[in-house]
Length: 399
Image 1 (cartoon, one colour):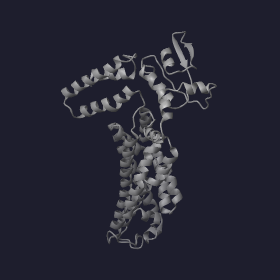
Image 2 (cartoon, rainbow, N blue to C red):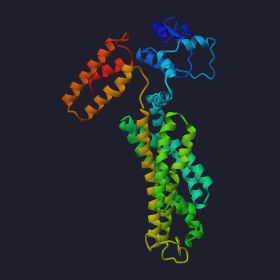
Image 3 (spheres, rainbow, N blue to C red):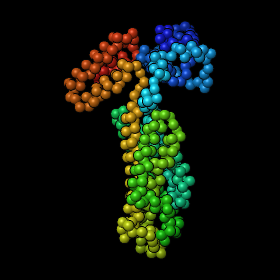
Image 4 (tube, one colour):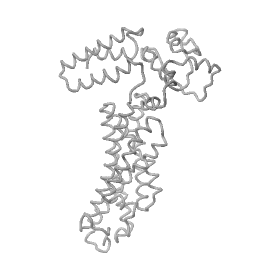
């Protein structure tokens, strides 16, 4: 540990004996940035927080001030000095690389995509708000419902699962997104049965508002795609940069929830008209157009289907653009050159080959990869320790 502190040029470390002198607690402060991430990764590579009995803890600090700012500046590592010497274009290109730790980010994404009580509760509340916004022609309620809606979480999970080839995360996001859309549609359907039954305006063709009709037109599909494409790019950039404000704007611009709720409303109205079709006094006319059919219930049902297509196309557009922009951002963990090469090259090849190779070929490839990584370990002082050594052991053990 002393050697690690010297290599990382940390001079403010304090040592404390714990457990009757059987263990040592080392504490030091660092400003958030590349150096902090590099020190954390170095400690992990050397087994701190990986080996049994060792613990690595990062605690956020609200204020950090050092009297030796000049000395700290002079002791910056070569990477930070190179960054200062780079021109504007080099800094722009360097900023394209994500600085988030992928493992931490994936856990947050997975948590937000899981079908939990909070997820279902927020979805039901948002769907009810969207229903009131649609029937009352109130954009404020619709905007509030889109901000509350948790449907963006599963989409982000599906995007990340695709980029990092985590099929469980990808499947979790896709399935929960579909379930969320179905739940929103069901809430809209039940809401529509209640509202359309008690409000006589829906029986004389005056109940459908502009907010409802605007989501049932064919040109809404094209408009939705054009809006969802930049929204998908904003999702990728916002989540990697921890820009919560941009994600709130994406939630409003993407408009995933209202079209799904609107489709449920339309289908509920079509069912009610079909049930009471013989009663001409109660449901004389529910829609004033016949673009798709001369039959009122079929016309409204098709309009509801178009509204559902708007939701699906928005989801697909956000998904595709999110994947493209995450490819551009090159999501990869920060590490040393060998470690980065290991994650971006060796593991990718092994993963792809294990998907397609026969058992014998995959075993042979695994052994070759383990030998290559062992060669990397032989060149360093922390041989047999840390996360990299653990991966070597798992590779040699096989599936």
